[in-house]
Length: 149
Image (cartoon, rainbow, N blue to C red):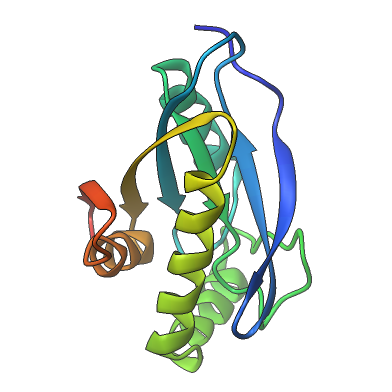
């Protein structure tokens, strides 16, 4: 299935604007939505490729920047010792209620998207697995997959 280039939107959350990236199939119709949560490095190349792969299988995929309160929009942490240290510090600095508010914003964004059927799932990798698990407690989430959480 052919997919779109990545679009972005800045979503309002209780703690400020959160950049999220949207990848979806090209073509008429609506598709189930997935929120894809990244590892501690945010929206890296491998995360973007995972979003594209999921979209190519018929999903509208939203990928939020999980540290939007702590880093400027568009920040990707390096896959090195410094990036890992920063990402690991951020994951414990940010509050659980902030992560939960972000989940609600990302899910609402997908649910109201003209490309989404309203059926929602969550997927996460590394810390994203924990975030997907938490987001799966939202009543409108119908599926979840957590990878090396």
